[in-house]
Length: 190
Length: 83
Image (cartoon, rainbow over all chains, first blue to last red):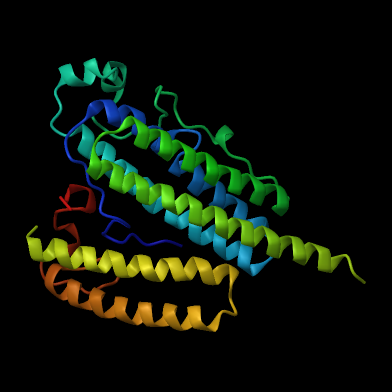
């Protein structure tokens, strides 16, 4: 089970309101390589992991991704805060505004809603952990492209923290994969 | 939210991150005794910071005792804070 802790994992800062960046950043909320997809992928794959290490790492990283989802939500909320309808429309978010005003909704940067088709849960721990490593690299690349699009040092500080977490998670999944492969190999020896 | 609360919160966030990073590492390195000692020490320090923070600013999570009236509803929530 889970409990909420009334704090963020990392101070989510923006230097100024910027609807254009909110439009790009929301893909890490509800896009294919975003934090919702990451969390739900790991938390559903954990049930069929064969070792305690793999069950633990998927549970813990899946939980940390929820904390990242909250950081992204906070950044988008702050980037949109106090913006006018005219600014929202000029940034290409007029259609989003019509459906959601400034509320947070799970879409990618082009407004496509989140879908479970973004993730897989294969039942094969080697296949699933490879997917997880790829997911971390795709998320890292997304953060790099977002940093390239942003000239806000405060926002970039938070995005760099999130990029760094993808690198650490990739490392931990790689170690879990090795542990799982050794476990599977040991079962073949009679 | 005053400066003291933001500073206390950021100190607590940093300490919890330290513990979390050791937690992930230990998931795949369960026999690293030095890391385990560091994790246990980080958790002890975090508990002290959390107790101190909650005494001043109210509960951080479920089942932390509350003064009257129910303090959980007090603002700001984490996304409303200027860090």
